[in-house]
Length: 357
Image (tube, rainbow, N blue to C red; front, side, top):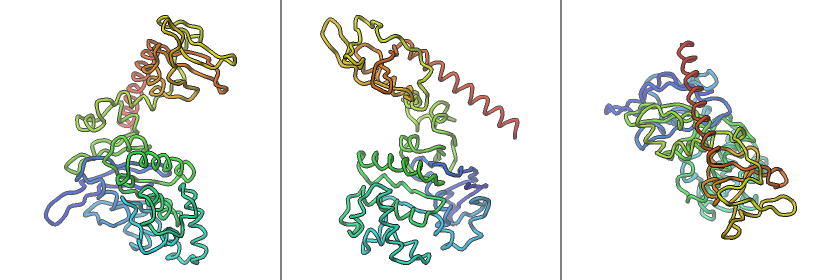
């Protein structure tokens, strides 16, 4: 666990970058610091590995004050990924990844062998190991940067806007890769971004920083979308926060109609194996626009209902056979119930926190 206890960073000219920050970063989870430029999120991140020294307060990692260890020793135990990867241009990809293990006394041969394995773990061919950074695409360089940060198997990984320098398609791919890696490795990750969508997608918890170095809200993404703490947080998460919040809501309890149910004159047509072919109506066969199965969230189901010419989403079993329909009116009822349940749960959490305090 990483703990900020009343941490402040004030510069000699009087500028306050971070003011009285107190929060706990949970072990084995991804915590995202998000907010506009100049709000203190990057300063807070860099105080964890003492690239920036706090003016007051304490930062603890697993109960130990970060100031109790020499800077170099502390940083070797914390992976660090920055925008643009920050690779050494004169070293091969393998030697970039092997940098920290070699500094820690691992033989170059052993470190390079491990580096090849790490390249494959982050989705790169080991054959790229003999190339130089300039011979790689931006997305490939960023993957190498992640591999280098993981090379010494640090329990903590700091990521400072790691995906902001790549195009949207590559960025989406890298985000998926990070979530896959985290599922395998379970690191304690602190990631900085200015993109609220990235924060909500990646974070187990999200810390929203406002101008003036103020921590506006610290919550799980679903709670952030459901109940923003103030007008600033509400404006940051956007006007479509209700729709995005459905991505965290389970669609398992939604009411289903039988497959043979007629919807606005349209009937679902099935093939010989019971798989959906399309909606049959007066104008011929219309597409279903996709199906969903067990485990789908309310956002996925809502999107299918909106796209469907019948205003109904088709559920299928593990064999792709249609086994139920979700109609728009039943969907609307479940969405209302889900939001009430979310608000009730948040209210109860606040009561319990107040009683504990």
